[in-house]
Length: 349
Image (cartoon, rainbow, N blue to C red; front, top):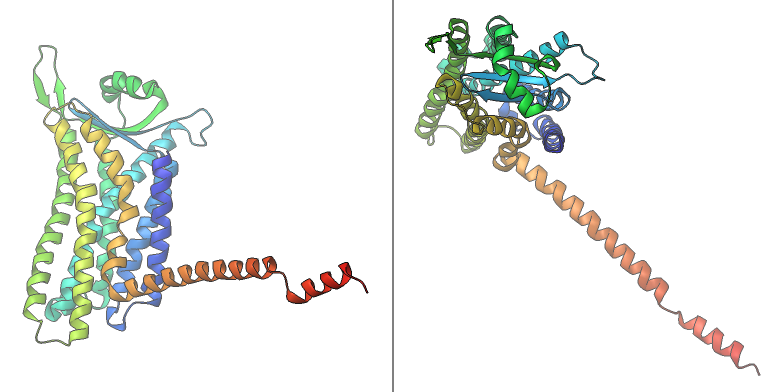
């Protein structure tokens, strides 16, 4: 809980600062891209504030994975509505899969004008916001249809839930599935609903990663080819935005895509390990807290604004200490007139 609170507080603070920089310190050449940056910052603020009270726990056991929250006696929500909190959390995660893919599509369109005019100009710019929302609802629908709570999962996960949380399965609101069924003679068969659902999730993750790497490579090649054609100021801004985006994408790739891949692969391969559970809980909570940092360090106007703030704070502290020292020295020194008056009073004529 302390870890979640710390990450959430840092995430909200840094993203609020980033929002201020986007709208007050962005160069004019940034154009409509600032709306996409604003959308991402607001999304991360929302995710952080939702994650803290939701208290979501993820676990994989054998050939199954389960994402759940514990229904406490004083909880405001009943178990059914609590399950929808878990679904909403996973749907938000699904939206994040498409978030940075939209950024790379727009960045390539801003460099390759013919592509931008055809796919990201005018009303088509709105599609960059639409696809994360589409993935959000699609991911949520997959969870509701294929991974919803059922008696078979209750029995399969009852022991591990009791062992890890000390709670009976009846006190847990969860989504999850197992990828294999075991018949009486020990034969293992595919659980078709689980594979139908996870195939759709793999498609969403795959298209997201494909767009990131595909458009990222094309952005890099196009930037390299236009170094001597466009103005230096425009080219420098494009490079700053691109490199910031690369780092901002490496963060979710390491903290989100990789953990969710491991989290799915372990039960798909029927590998029972606590590594995937510990990894996904730590990294997903950390993601929105560190994701704004590349923009602060790489985009020149943002970096200079942050340095000005730090200098102002340091100067203010320095000025306060100097004023305090002068006041102390002023009160600590004995004025000459006071000394003279003292002598006169002690030696009357």
